[in-house]
Image (cartoon, rainbow, N blue to C red; front, side):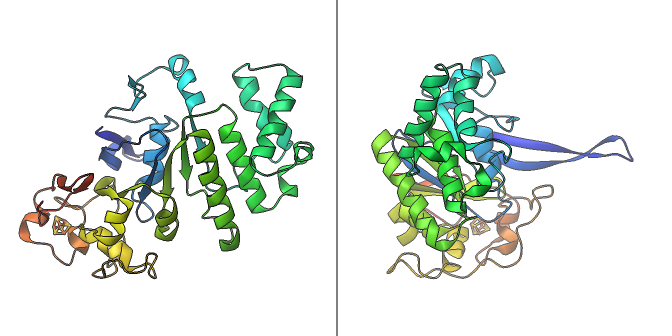
Length: 315
Ligand code: SF4
């Protein structure tokens, strides 16, 4: 609730703070057990920072993070450790996220060593089971990451995320670095694991075609704020925010029969160091009115589970 990640901008020459980047600026999200919430938006809109701050890999500067009823936004590291087991991440780049000097077995055993789980024999058995779970042979444990393809490496990244039996996994663009032919395999693997293990996912993606396959609900971000949240069908067939409509229009029909969108967003996303006043989208919005430049719109409920932050949208 009200999650914020603000970074100071400092001038080395002036030796003082000269501004603030509002990377995440008052985000409200929730995800239920076993559910997939997709977080979408253009590059630089704050999706990844939001995901990492939920896991406290980036420290939030304001707001609340409740996990299974407990407030964890300000837990010191020692109190955070039990929650780290329950919340994991699959990174975007399977080429950069695996230590090239470690064997796959070493990479997958590391979470057990850090959390002091089992002895060497037990850990080896757990590693073999993890590899089988993601469709790799147990012998893969003896090899190094560079010996695997991109898709296989992402399977290893997923296995690492699952090692401690988490309840929530954040996928930070988990297939965007992979060939299109491999993306479906990884998405299907993640869906199967979700069904088998009851995982909740927050799936960060700029790819609406992927989102249309995986999401139960979708939250659309623009310049650090959530502008629309809706169940998947409502988002693809009845998007109400002009930015969501513009995003959908940029995709070659991810869902046949959806409502025709207005137009592709014009221009680049403005800098979060100097966001436009009022509704951040107003310089690019084809429907903007004078009020939009002065007043930030609050989210309004337009249907069950469907909220839109736009002055022109009414229930
Ligand atoms: Fe466009 Fe105004 Fe709605 Fe923002 S509040 S999306 S500028 S119409």
